[in-house]
Image (tube, rainbow, N blue to C red; front, side):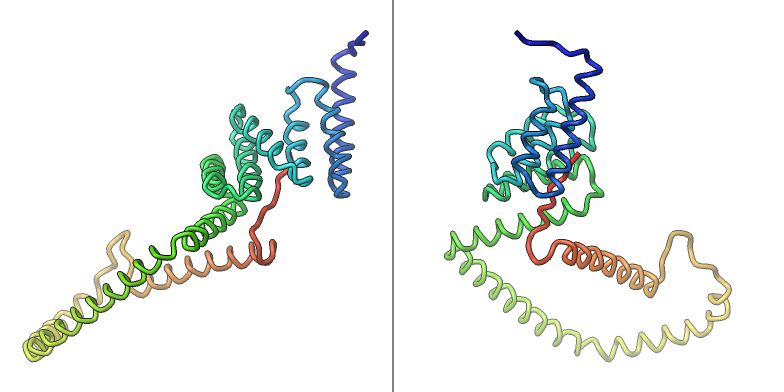
Length: 242
């Protein structure tokens, strides 16, 4: 005979099981963690924390099919964007570990749709895309050769175009120098007036634009370096717990 416990007592037991599971998880005892999380479910699928962390424990145990199914179900049913983003992130990790690269890329993209600021997911997405590109190159070497030949031909065409333009530039050089001299004279006449003019609102000088671009590039570089230091040389397959 099944004994039904009061809801408050059941909730306390479920919480205790989750805390036990979290402790096992921190100690990398993933079998025990998974068992504790399963106890927290109480025979239902209502426990969000228990279900989510159970999927994480399965991932750590390399039970990838179970983890994929668990996070697919959570991501599909979740209405909270934070939960959805984490579920898709972990789903992407499990798919990536299973060498299902295209599917992992789609999962990471869905995670970023729900949390665009997650650098870990963005890093994993870039890693999966690069790995897929390498796989495609290995599977289709003839196409790679054709692409390389096309790139070489494009470069030759560009070099020839530059050569032709150089001859035209030489013909126009004398006229250009003359026009420049006239322009310099005019600019000198207007210098005093231009010095008093204020920059137009919303416009950047060339120097300011270059400085802004350099700062943006440096910020992106710093982000990548930070992620590499955090995760090492491989992909940043950080599995998220709830």
